[in-house]
Image (cartoon, rainbow, N blue to C red; front, side, top):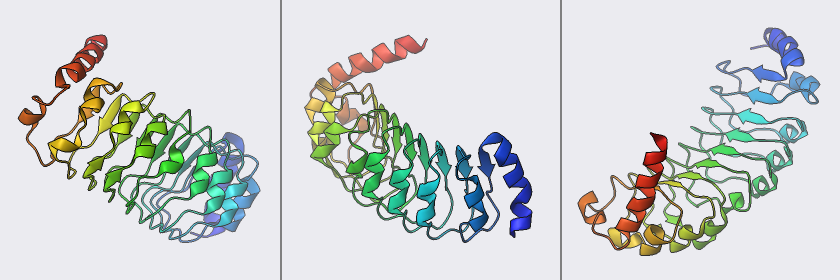
Length: 238
């Protein structure tokens, strides 16, 4: 798609602060985007063919929402960490193996979606971001949830369809974690510490599709305490 084809999108974006140019077969960041640097609050470049992203993305200081889902990205530039107003980052369905440590600078982040990539290590750079509510890491290759996870402030953590076989009991110390999704991983029942059941704030713990049957989970130490939280939350919903 040539710049002429983008012109109408740009004119609209100048008025709204929103630019959506998905499904355009783009392989390179349009240089003409620079004219929108001081204006853009939402940038949607999903369903294109980007393999890499230029450092210039860090210049879009007003951005609150960045969506690059369903591209072919193998990396994100460190400059993404300069988007200080960013509230939501969506990079699902790409080919990312790591994430830049500079993401730890994004103190306004509320939602991060990294589903369906090739991430093998739990991204601890999100720990300490106090406004982060949702972190979706499903469909990756993560094998371990390390002790450092205790400093993550999310209310929902999605690790479904990874290869997690080791789960630190420190996840019980997460100050806001209510929903923990670990379906279709490689967990043995012994990997679920009783501390997670008795001492955490987790009220939804999704464990189907691991290396134990759910009936044995109901007999685990602390299960009754967990069910008290689960039931209390369900009652509030009705």
